[in-house]
Image (tube, rainbow, N blue to C red):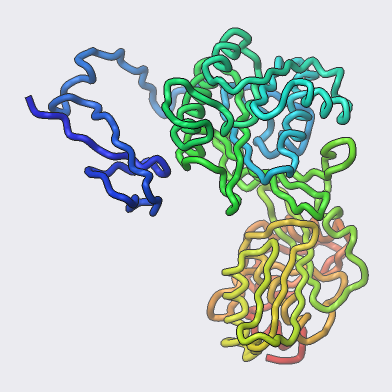
Length: 455
């Protein structure tokens, strides 16, 4: 009989290698290859362990199944990010920086679900029940019929969940769990992967929705193997700057709703308060128009959001000028600076550039290129843009302006907030409503010439 061949799997990305190596060729991780047991003991047609399994039930694309009934918490921003409510049997992973408010948010969510009649269970591996009760009293949630538990043993947690069968179970956090069938320390890659697999499997077979809290690394990624993000149905990130009271719940993966949907909250003394109109909140502290300020009409998920992009350009005393960027993609900023220099003959050499998105918002949409360029030029030329102007459009490497999607929604949101003029790419198909004037520009050179008298 042929000897079964060994294989080595990467604990970070799951890639399989025929032999051990110090570095994974797929993800670049060091010392992540672990020997995997072969699935067959002989030829590929031989059944695992010599035992037959049961045939799976197959269906066709025309098979009709009833859509799952979502559970509504009543917290509109949270339900929006999930795609309209909590799907039974779903597994959700929530990540965020330490102290950003993950436990506060989930305690409020669990209390809302419990008050709505859905049996909810909150299990903490980091705090004692008395500490959770203290936070609940501060948030005014002491009367919620929410049950608490403090445990790190995965076996005990699964036994409790199987006996209680709640509609919602919150595990805070996945890195503190310990599975006795895995010989590794809590928080290690193998422990996190095993705990997540068992909890997700329980959610699928029992119909209990499970929310897992995950710690993040210094790069902002959820700690542990990336396979955890593939196993769950939804991955949420809770973002925000420590100096701002705004918090943003962002969906980066969602099998039951749109990805990149956001929910906006404001951190107060009584917990997290929902923000139904983020645009008005982000622009509430915007005073008189000043050089270096431009308002971008963006789209986050399914909702339009207006944000202020601030720029400061100053002479540099360093051999290599500084490029400090907060809330924007630094690579995209470098591209826009290069296009301004090469296509519009506007140099930024010898100048320090500082960019910020007001309110702690993070903007990754390419449609922010035009507003970003306008803020840079306004700061460099020391010329303020009109206070009632919004901008949106993508800039190509040739300097041309490309149209972006959902232009009508962007214009409607701007008009609702009192803006009377907008600048967009020439091929924008949307027509503005009454009260707002749309100026279409073909390229960046034309925009610079019209707005700043150069180009």
